[in-house]
Length: 312
Image (cartoon, rainbow, N blue to C red):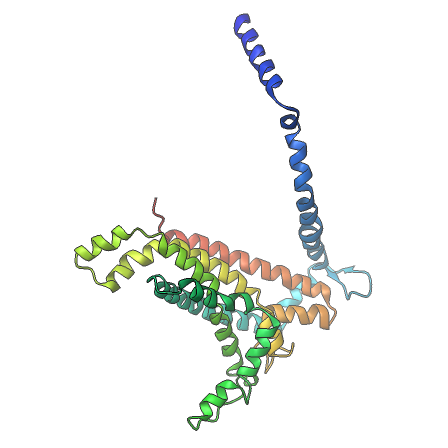
């Protein structure tokens, strides 16, 4: 036993002697380079997050010190009709626009996957709306396109149709925002295109030999092989749609009108926090939104095991 112990001690000493000074201090250097990120995490993310949790239990108007009122803000949300309206509008927007957006993205990805000329150019052009869709400039442009004298009504006028003011009519205002979100299909399209390129061609060749039509190949090969990509895009786009704010704010002028038809949850949160100066109530709303997104995301992950197939 003593000989084995001595041998182990010699190996340990040899290993320590072979380590350079840089290797001995690699932990310190790692913490040095991670320091700025950790500081940003605490000051920019974790700090405000915990502060908002505290403020959600207070009455705080930004002008005076917060006053702790317990769960009154959360109780008040149950009796707030405009909050319920904002939830209805937001859920309609999310559950209609996201599936349509993914269908459009997949359709364009299938078209571009054919290897057409100028693929890089088309890919860039189709991706551009995703970069600009959430900007103020595009929201203003959208308001002009669907205005009373906008391009849509000018086009309809060529056929003798007198179109309404789409963004100022409560029956159509939300539809214009849904169309805007569907139009920003570029990001999921690029991800779908990458997924299509990863499907082995031999599957399609074998199916063609067996007499499978293009439609049959699409449903039996393409869709099952793409389910992980579909799931990934679905989760990302759902979360992004719930956080949508700029289009509704610009198109409605910050009011959520007409008749609260574009009152997104985030827009109502903004109104409570920065218009009514009820920051405690706005903080409680933010945590409710976090809970909604977390529950729906968890539900997506739970249901994914029944329809998402991984090619192991």
